[in-house]
Image 1: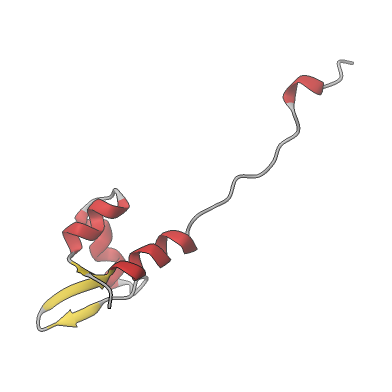
Image 2: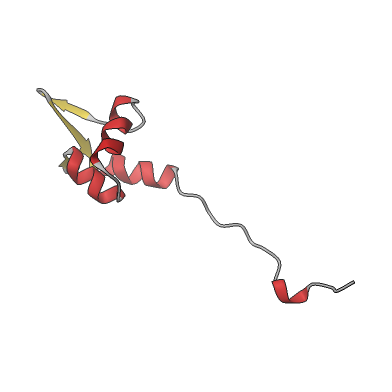
Length: 69
């Protein structure tokens, strides 16, 4: 079973403010668990969110090989 994180801990892991983490929950863009009136987010959900939103760099041609007109 995953460790459940509170909103503050999720914000710290993502390097964002608490407001952004709360918005992810409100918009249901991240998996969360209701424990009474508390909201908790599984660690695996945070990792899945980061993985899903990771953008790979593109390969560019070397700059030094340009032709001069």
